Each structure stands twice: as structure tokens, then as C-alpha cells.
Image (cartoon, rainbow, N blue to C red; front, top):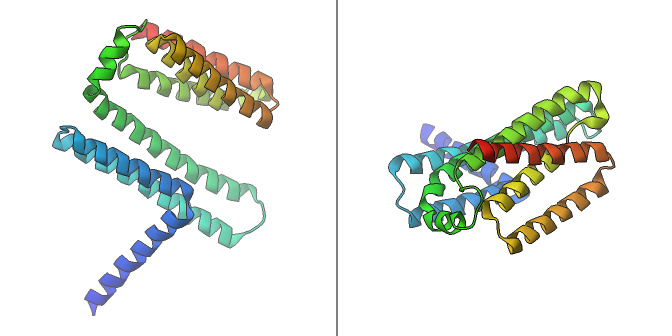
Length: 228
């Protein structure tokens, strides 16, 4: 009967979802993050539109992770040896997850930022620059500017290809220091940034790439704060 077929299709779908949650660490992280966000939304007086936006973005992230998992399974089924095209397929699928996660971060920041007024008021008393939603835009500008320059420079001067991780790390660190402007927090941020740099040094010996990326992050953060 058609009812039986429909029930089986639901069961297969749930088995696929269960497989992704059990075997994929990133999927578990997405689920935990979604749960925290939804619980936080219960504590705030969000509008119907804001709740719908949260559900849509959460679903997009989970959907992208499911597609990524299925592509990885197909690639591994076809070949167990390293192949450049297999790497491209996996990297592009992971890139889709990264973009949807970035979208979720932007939507979540835009929705929850106005409700955290007590943080905004406390920080504004000491900061050089007022904390606004525009800080998210600065981070996004850093990401896209560094990524585009990275793609262009890699064609001609491979050694000067800016590190995206260093660019984002120093951009965020600069924003935190200049916005909060408190010595204990600044020291903590510098310490954590130093740890991030040290870990990158162990993985990457191209210091030009790291220095260039760090400089880009700092410059864009400072210029962005001036424009806010």
C-alpha cells in the first residue's frame, strides 16, 4: 500500500539523518548550536518573522551538512585513492556548509543583538567605538576581500597569498580590543591570538602569507570602525 511506502520513506530519511548525527562531528555541533539558539529564542520576545528566519537558516545549515556527508560517501565509494577531482568535490561541498553557517551567523547576530542591550550599554561606557551590528559587516568584508585577493595573488605570487585564517583572526582580535577597550580583556585577546599564530606556524612555514593576512585583518578592522 502507498501508506506503507510513505512510512518507509520517512524511516529511510530518519536513518540518513541519524547516520549523519552519529558519524559526523560537525553535524553534532550544528545540532547543539541549533538547540542553544532555539532555547535562547524562548527566553526572548522574538517576533514571528524572526523565529521563522532562525528556523530557515538552521534548516539550511543542516541541509548543507547532509549534502556534504552524502557527497563524501559517494566519493569514498568510487575511489579510496587520492584524486584531485575527489578532493575538489569534497572541498566544494564543505564550502557550501561554510557559506550556510556564515549566513546563520549573520542572521543570528542580527536577530539577537538588539536584545542584548545590557552588554551594549556596559561596553559603550569604555569603548573607543560603539558596538553595533556593523561589526559583523566588517568581518564579512575581511573574509571576502581576503578571499578575492588570495585567489588573485595565487596566480602570480604564490608566496604572498594572504592567509584567510590570520586575516579573520587579527580582524576579530582588533575589533574586540578597540570596541571593549579594557586592559584585562585586551591582554586575554592578545594571548589567544598568539596561540592561534603559534598553531599556524607549526602547520605553515610561509611567513609572508601569515604576515600579509594579519596585516589585512588589522587594516580592514581599523578602517571599518572609522566608517561606522
